[in-house]
Image 1: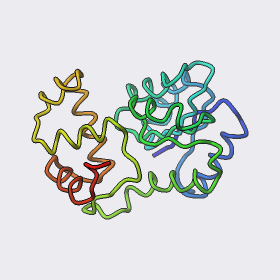
Image 2 (image 1 turned 30 degrees about the horizontal axis):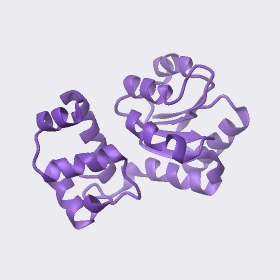
Image 3 (image 1 turned 30 degrees about the vertical axis):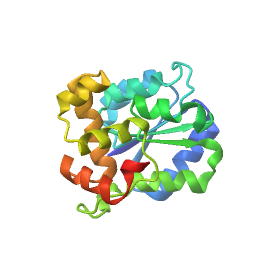
Image 4 (image 1 turned 135 degrees about the horizontal axis):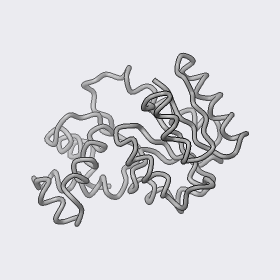
Length: 197
């Protein structure tokens, strides 16, 4: 498996690559400067297990890069590493499909901590639900709706999105909580107080 690091600033890109190699020496890290290179990289290296994406690239605008990556790689973990404050873009990035948002100014230790969480997925206890530090607004809405017993169709109507989009959102939510079903998600939400967030 490979990891894609997409950033047009060489120094930042090299710093992230060094962190990744320290955390997972065996994984191939592919460095890209712009979004347009992603299709070619997928053709050469296969789908990555993780993408680290800078928001501000020469060929992106706002969170457009997040949406494009999500369309190309719906099942790949996506971390946004941005110079912009989280208050400006985090909710938008998560809505567009990012799994995590880290400010570049957070420093190497914090960035490494987030990367470690995503790279450790395969060694975690498969059956242990995870209580996340922070959920997006949409994920909180979904938990409340699941708790009310709404079907995918009901959720789609209420949120005015397609049923397919609901399924994608739920898949990401279950993965984030490390649960396998709606009932497990609801149970975790109740016991961990996630419905009150």
